[in-house]
Amino acid sequence: MALSKEQQEQLTPSLALKELKEGHQRFVNGNTLTLSASSLINQTAKAQFPKAIVVSCIDSRVPVEQIFDQNIGDIFVARVAGNFINNDILASIEYACAVAQSPLVIVLGHEGCGAVSSACDGVKLGHITEMLQAITPAIENAQKTSTKPFNSSNASYVSSVTESNVLLNINKITQQSQLLKERIENGQLAICGGVYQIKNGTINWL
Image 1 (tube, helix red, strand yellow):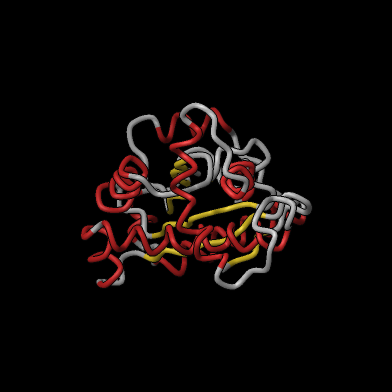
Image 2 (image 1 turned 60 degrees about the horizontal axis):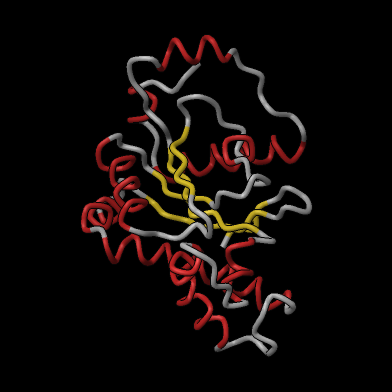
């Protein structure tokens, strides 16, 4: 069954996270739920009541709904290379949480991120150049605690940039959105982050 308005209203941020973590464990264990797509399409045709919004990278190896074993109507997903927050993504989060009443935001980075590696290497190519600037704060932060070389050949450094990028963008959400900050202060919303491991399908929660 698709999530109803009444069920969404009963979801606390912690309960929503618990359900997504349980779904992820089903994914890792290979025990995902089998639901009727046609039935869910009919149930959600007139309204949706998702339990969360996930901000993710565009990487094809990070299929967000599958990773959390969620189906039609369960979660919002905002995807951009490098899973960073800009005005459009922030507005999408505000819609999901302040309008559609989702109680949870997850910022999900991932191992082996091409955008992060490209940013570490200072790649300059078309519009990608400007996009990668969004990851610069994470690079500067990671360099404070990492050892050289500061490029994609250093796996530990890249991992540090990936984690820093998630954490900095979580902070950016509350710093730039009064709407979301108020919901967090009122206990209506929580924000958390993790890094998806493409080698084994697990999530390292931060």
